[in-house]
Length: 424
Image 1 (tube, one colour):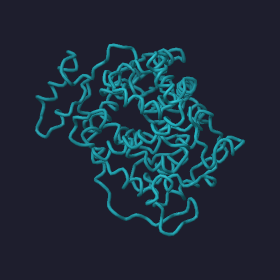
Image 2 (image 1 turned 90 degrees about the vertical axis):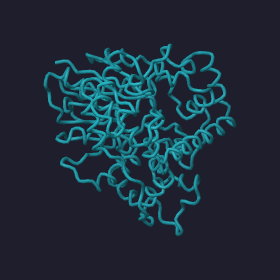
Image 3 (image 1 turned 120 degrees about the horizontal axis):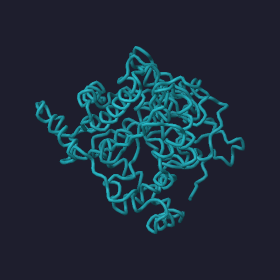
């Protein structure tokens, strides 16, 4: 794997701790236009961007759709058209039950994509990525494809990024980070086309538009980002709620933990879905958490979200203290040993009858199995642990840890949601 040594790399930090005061301005290296007119001290507040952004995603509508589909139906774009009414919702239920029609995401013929694991195709892609000059080109191309695709979907990627970088998020960072936290070795690898991985301001500033684009890629026929999110997030929340109602023994969801919460997108959905619960967002990146906490400060909520800078494999939180532990789009970024560690920690943290919910890429997704060579090569070039994720039997791992009632469902054409219960 090609590793471009950043200004402050693990080699220059013997204790394996990222010190943000040593970090070069990644955003300014990539986009010189983002540099403020007068250079501020690093991590101090630059000039605030007061220009209005795009209309925010309507969480209330998404949550309403999630509730409206209780009973096992999956949302489709046509079910969201104004005036569709009960007839279309019933058609979606029939399609989901009978396995016909576009309401049910399709599985491929393989257990996992042919381009993953130890297949000849996967080894060929790995050899290409290992060639340093070619890897550098792949990384740039992958980044350009992601941003261009997002902006074609009316996601204001650069505008949103600039707004974060010109905010007071740097002050929040100093309050939220744990300077004594030691990062696991895998977390110090470059990925997502960032040399510093998730430990950089550029990665944190771009995380929300990148997350928004996930839904549009999953539901390309959706007419808007809002509609795509209603389907992707609605089906995910619906799967969690249905599992908990069926297997929890009437335990209420009073405490929720979102491990790998990033900039808090999934955490806010959970908080809106379970408004009476106390919700905690936990992540290894203090940069991401600073962006999450800054946004939360602008919201009015019955129970404000608490943000914790910690390792999801060893959170330091009390045992038996949560009713729901969620990991949204986390596992594919981790080696197999870390995924196992995350599942074990979730088991420790959940009360008897508690639910774990993991949503991520589905190895059985027909869409992912049929990706073009260009797309899957670019994707693998920015996801160093993708092969390990696809090779791991996640459901069996959860059973071995002690979970029962393990169920996996395709909640959209690309992603599965795996739910399970801590036994009494």
